[in-house]
Structures are given as structure tokens and as C-alpha cells.
Length: 225
Image (tube, rainbow, N blue to C red; front, side):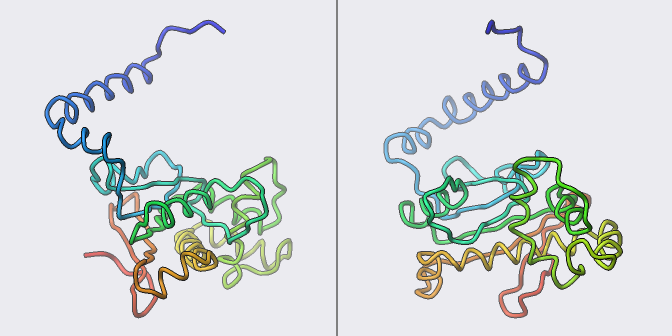
């Protein structure tokens, strides 16, 4: 397949790479040299959404080497399931905790999440028309249970219609479900119980720029000041 002339989006990305190289390799070569020779030692694993509007490094202004990031549709954590199948998110969690020995794990959700909106539509009875997204977002099905009736029921359809106007409720509930699923990983639970690993649930409001976090005592989402 012949290469085509770079489009405007590709030219912008290449220009960004040049700017990155100038900033870090030309002006601050020592920091990048250390990362190259000594490897990465991030303290934080961040599990975020693939949504293009919520880039963890941009959002947190993190420097190279500070975050170990895994992104997927709807920032979900599946339950621990060592069955020999392909588990990209679980592999990243295992590597971050057991190999890199991170001390913090953040599950970062956000407003206007298409994956969560799809999950709500599925509970309302809409037929799945994809191969991968619908089974994946079903991981967070328990997040809907307190708010939506049984799948396919009239009550579910009515509840889902209401939630389409207030999806933040489910977006935050899904973050909580992922935090709970993290604790099904034995090595995560061991770290938390030993006090060497902390878990955080965050939710970012794209429209206002506010960050919300699960309070360590009340376990409710509150704006971060």
C-alpha cells in the first residue's frame, strides 16, 4: 500500500513531536537521558477513558515518566479474571502494581462519556450493533442497578430516558464500580490492606473544568478544591 501525502491532522501531530523534542531533548536533555538509562519509575497508575477530550497527561500537566496510563472505552476496570484470554487493562494494572510498584491508582471518569451513554441505552433495551463496545461497557452494569429497572423492562426504558438527561450519575457510579473491581485483584487488595497502595476515584466535568473525587470518609463524590 503506497504512502499518501500527510494530511493536515498528521502534519500537526508531526509538528507537535518536533516541539516535544525541542522542549525535552534539546532544552532539558538530562531528564530524558535519565528516563532512557534508568527506566521509568512512576508513582501513579491512571486508568482513563479513550475520549480525545480527556487526556490524562494534559489534564494533570504531568511530565514524562510521572504517569503510567491505560486508557479504554469508559475508563473501566474489569474484575480479576485470570482465564488465559486477552486482558489489556488487567495486564496494565498487574504490571503497574507488581513490576513498577506504583503507590497510587486513579480511576478517572468524565462527563459526556459515550461509553456510559451506550451502557444506559443497552439497559433500556436497545439492541447492540457492535462486536466489542457493548460487551465491554457491560462490565459497569452494576452501576445502573440502583437507578434503572431490570433490563428490557418498561421501567428500565423509562428510567434510562431520564438518565439520558443526567448521565453524570451513572458516570460516577461506573467509576465507583471500577474502584470496587480493582479490589478483586489480589495484589491490589494486598497493597491497599498493607498501606502501600492507595486507590482514588475521580470524575472530570468537561464543561466546567471541575474535578470531583470520592471522599475517603463519606465515599461520596465531592468537588476538588
